[in-house]
Amino acid sequence: MSGSAPPVARILDRLEKHYGKLKPVTPLDPYAMVIYANCGYPANDSTCAKGFEALQKRVGIRPDQILAASDKELTAILRLGGIVPELRATRLKEIAARVQRKYAGDLAAALRGPWSDAKKALKGFPTIGDPGAEKILLFTRTAPLAAVPSNCVHVPLRLGWGEAHKSYAADYRSAQEALGEALPEDCDARLRAYLLLQRHGQELCKRSRPRCEVCPVTSDCRYYQATH
Ligand code: SF4
Image (cartoon, rainbow, N blue to C red; front, top):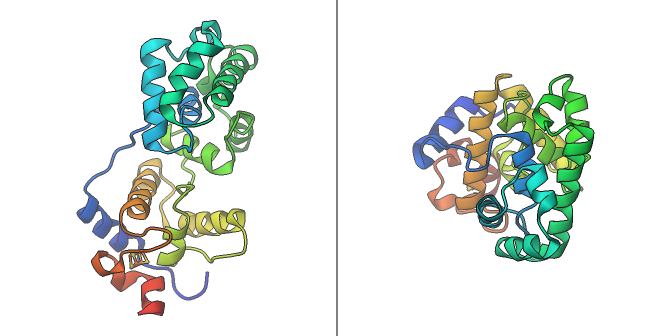
């Protein structure tokens, strides 16, 4: 990262004063998080929550419950979470079968061990790449990884944590490394940062048109300093 790192404590405190103390809205069990991530498309907390809540209510989320449901029933439920419900129904069955067969129904137990192995195990599930696996490990407090909200990577980069590159993967890795250096190696601290950066990206620091005129952290923002 070029220049000095932005003051992480001051920025997060200001964001928290603006947005309040944030809590995860997703389930906090690794298996449930994998299911949740596949319940909506395009995947976000609105679509995934709608599909997940309907699944919980009408079928249940245990592997045996999902495997016992018909494709037609799962598809009808997942339609509440957005497009391509047939594909997501197939994926839920793949996830349930994999957890039952490979992990004896207990994915959380299988993740206890080296973080690299846990991440690899999670990436074996549909739609779970590095950002998703790292999010799950952080949210479930399995590992204090400096996960970055996958659709808000531009936020830490604008603030000065990391450098923009030509690919999403390089941007993500750069932001993650910079945040890893700036934040204590602690699940609570890193989860708080994740949630605040995500909310900031959704509400003010939008990808295409950031609302810098009402942002509480302009004085510490590298992007703002360079463009105003
Ligand atoms: S000043 Fe603008 S670019 Fe910087 S964090 Fe705030 S909204 Fe984002």
